[in-house]
Length: 587
Ligand SMILES: [Zn+2]
Image (cartoon, rainbow, N blue to C red; front, top):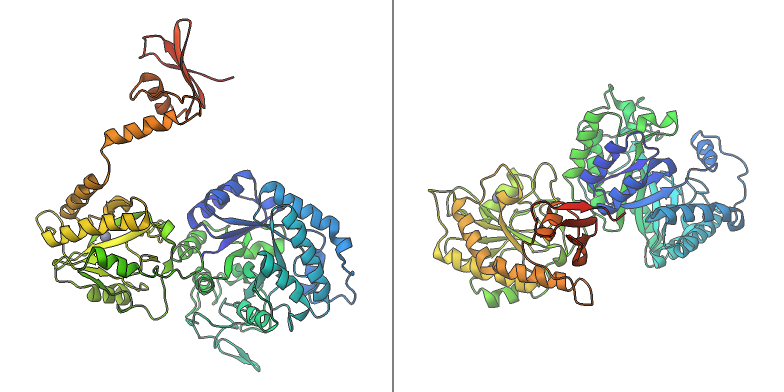
């Protein structure tokens, strides 16, 4: 799972847009001054869910709690007293098109306070529903509630039933791994050496959400609500090892904690945290506190101030799957169906070597759109087993990179489920993203010009596999070579590219048919009669070049002119003078 921004304000719109469009985290959180239309549009275009927090006077409670001065009496909350606040925040969230809206922040977190806080959050959820928004309730600070969740159960139950989400904050210090696994405080002494590679490790600060969820289950909450980490980072956790740092990861810069083996840098630690979150499908998103700052005390939390460190942080996130691993197994009966079409098929999906802990992300069948052809280079006798060892032990990947493998005898090997997003066409710019829609099809050997050429058996199996996949998935997959997706590689070589081109010509209808299709589409534009489309005709050709969009009228004459309206303008010329076309605005 990739970590999103917690935008407190908007000091640099461009930087935030780059982060959102490059990292594409599942969730981004905004305070009122932290977004504008452009930022929210970018989130929408990139499938980033958004959560709004309206910073209010209630923040004063947060300050007193963090300052260690616990007020004897807190103002009694009642739904009635909170009604104007709930009304304001849900209206704002709906107006700006947010996915989620938050309520209060880091307050009413213990004992009987939780009972009244649950009432508040239920009122928030109900009001949010009326406005077509989901609520992100709770917003509990690290380590809270400190003892029992019992008082808050009604809110958990309602959230689980109605699809709202519990927001939890998780900070640790001086590294994100403190309090997790073996990294514990033990009566004045501490251990801080466990890299915590256990994908279900429990923590007291970070990864505490796993303990919380287990308790909800014990308390009979069913269905369990999803969780989002709505703040995270390094904060002033006590007790903890080391005199430095203070609040915020930037306090580690220039100290021994800036890079601490075996945890690495801030970016490394956040990557570890994000990797842990990836293991739990019920975690729908997480954000790092610290894009911009409203308060000088927040400056050391900021991820966005140092361009170089930000790039390292982004690169670390990009090596992870975007979302939590939500296992999508091979559809049942897949192999049996395939064997009917291609008898010489061998299923290796359960038996190839794979990584001890790392797992590939999965996808739905609807997300598959293309097949990428690869050659392995090296000898033609290379096997899927040897390749799996290479990819796991040398490359450090979760398993073999390819989905299918066709050997020289034309035997087809299934190496991964087709729902597995394995690595074969990733680039350093967007690792993982190119792999999501692509099935990897490998041929052992070196298929560059002057080297190996596909055998008749390999050609025959390929010619059966591709149309079978198209039929099975109910769509025409884009069939291309690795080098068509990612630059800087010759893979799969000229000789396999020739086979790919040949198959594409067999599968795709000739261009003339597509012209017929386009013509039919124009005719179908409007119920009454459509708009006749003349291929290559000057007016639509010119409109296409000028990117004027779809036609809104048919062709017509007016005095000396011939003209046609398009979405973004009227194309016209003196009749017959087709080399002197002009555009007239609608207004
Ligand atoms: Zn390749």
